[in-house]
Image 1 (cartoon, protein in one colour):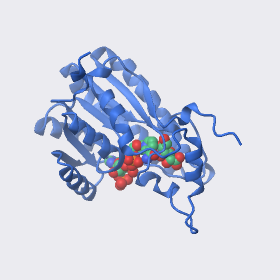
Image 2 (cartoon, helix red, strand yellow):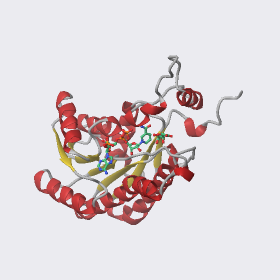
Image 3 (cartoon, protein in one colour):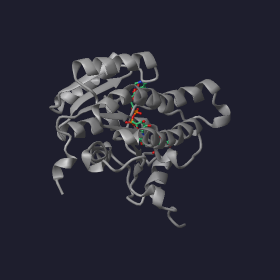
Image 4 (cartoon, helix red, strand yellow):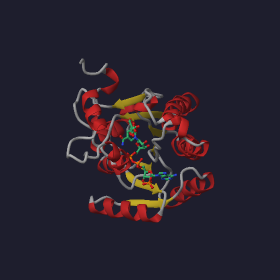
Length: 265
Ligand code: NAP
Ligand code: GCO
């Protein structure tokens, strides 16, 4: 086997919402594998924070302000990247939000907002890059899904609805564009230690672990939270030629959560 098929040398990768956390870790791995990195975030402050972090890691990245839910801004972003950097080979739909509110207390606007960022935006982004990918003769689209693409839990109805929908959008992009040599796959991270999950790991007043923290450790055969770095190898694989016949798949990177019934009492 030619190990060069795992290389991203010469590829252009756009990772959304990649100033920190999972997106930053994935983009950093892509840079190490040889890709040129482009990222966006919701405001200038976050883009500046991201630019400083990439610089510190020795990565030459380009950052743009763009709200992924705004189709006009997204179309402008893609046109600018094509002009300033080139046609995008790899798109990672990473930007996301969560609202933890019991469903019967959630307003329809709050529900819509989550669906907008976590489901409508990946559609808007993918729609914007696919025409150039078709012309170029290949493309990789990677949607960051979730445990909630498969499982429910209290307070995350909108997030679960969006991430379940994102799994099906992944399969549909595969179905519709596979013939153009475009592969669309998902990554389903387990519980990963990032600012998004910080409230679930906060220490209790007496210094003990948050009950949700204990619950996740018990629910994960690996007996730990994941790190953004745990997602790097799978993300490089799905962006590289080594996965050219992998399409419409969600690769769960969860320390075994989905395989496990839970600790017996
Ligand atoms: P995150 O807080 O979800 O970071 C995502 C980034 O996207 C942030 O910089 C965020 O900005 C940005 N963003 C939000 N709305 C945006 C918009 N409309 N346009 C552009 N950018 C926007 O952190 P994360 O934990 O690294 O999560 C990354 C992805 O992985 C998300 O899709 C998340 O759902 C998914 N995920 C996370 C976990 C986990 O355990 N952490 C597990 C499974 C899946 P702000 O900082 O202003 O919000
Ligand atoms: C939650 C968490 C999760 C994770 C992740 C799991 O409140 O349950 O935030 O939804 O972030 O998406 O894969």
